[in-house]
Image (cartoon, rainbow, N blue to C red):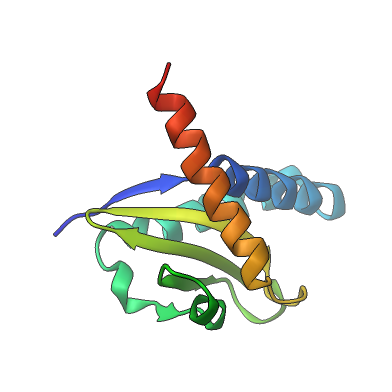
Amino acid sequence: MVFRVEISPEAFGDLDRISSYIQEKATAAIAERWFNGIFTAIRSLSETPSRCAVADESAELETEVRLLLHGRRKRRYKIYFAIHQETVRIYHVRHWARKPVEADELADLMDETIDSEIDDDSI
């Protein structure tokens, strides 16, 4: 089964901020390589999203949220997503060394995605 992968506006914002930070600290080429690499990892969720572990934060939510890790050592990122029927929805991306995302914060990100989908449907 092939899943459709959707990236929430909030997750796009995360990716943009991280890419800008990498470009600021290193080079545009390194930031572009990181961006392309993480998108390849995200696209891989279209084939086997259930291979990823359930996030610890998922225990406090009504939806099973999974976690894809991308990168190595000090350059690892957490990609939070959920599987909804035939769609994988990406909600949040953060550096692994940052404080873990709180379940409430993750729930808010998920609600914002649902709200933006409702707004898009009404246009």
